[in-house]
Amino acid sequence: MTIPIIILNYNTSADCRKCVSFLKQQEGVNTEIILVDNCSKKESLIALRVLAAEQGCTLIENKENRGYNAGNNIGLRYAAKKGYEYALIANPDMEFPQTDYLLCLVDKLLQDSSVVVVASDIVGLDGLHQNPMFRDGDWRGCFGWLTSLLKKKKADTYDFIDNYTESHYCSKVSGCCFLIRLNFVQSIGYLDENVFLYCEEAILSRQTEQKGFRMYYLADKQVVHAHVKNEKGDPVKRFKHWKRSRLYFIDTYSGDCWFGREIAKLSMRMYVGIFSIIMRIKKML
Image 1 (cartoon, one colour):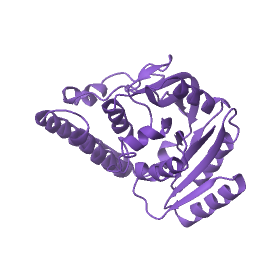
Image 2 (cartoon, helix red, strand yellow; image 1 turned 30 degrees about the vertical axis):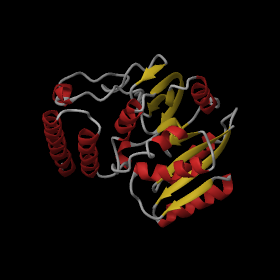
Image 3 (cartoon, one colour; image 1 turned 90 degrees about the vertical axis):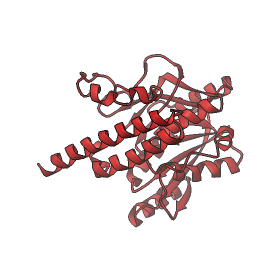
Image 4 (cartoon, helix red, strand yellow; image 1 turned 120 degrees about the vertical axis):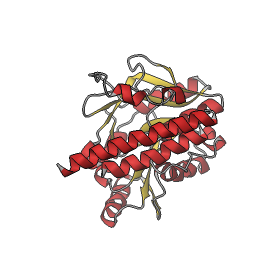
């Protein structure tokens, strides 16, 4: 069995090289590594071409950056056209220390037809666990961010992370690394391209529910998310992207009544406004 692995590059060719080096060590399954360039700068694209030639990767060059889901859809459509059953989506800054990682994820999909998305434990460079995630609540809990400001932070994970110590069916997984059934992807019309960045996980979670399928979390498999926060660009700009995506999720996927949606959107605008001001103040200091 051959599993396509889709890595979306946007000016991260050095991360792609490291990620590919890990993936080349996977055992028990054959792989086709698909590098999708999301309209990177010239030097990053050239480096990616060199990497693809050296490592025998498939390179697809996107001439327009329409966001995370749209970029990954290019790789997913390529994989589906070739007749593959599953595909792994992985961010360029993922590291795979376990050589049986992909095999174990594939085995879960082979064993359980109710599961369309399977993911593993993910730990950041800060040691915090990033999977699995709680289901997004309804409008009644939309001001929870106010109380979270006063709560003591957990030492091992974030407040929105579910039990990471045991394998179980879960509601939502991180978008940075997961295995997905391609016939399910086709049934939902591929990943929703109406969001440029952020909230992809929440949307995929709802789409999975709506189709009557499930996600699964494997606690004994782990990858490292080796991203550096201060290298992700202007935080104010990222907050704006997140706000737009979150408002779209609330309107399209939340299932809340009109009143609930309006309250949730008000909360989101307040949250982003307050934190944008804080970010700008920190930038000036």
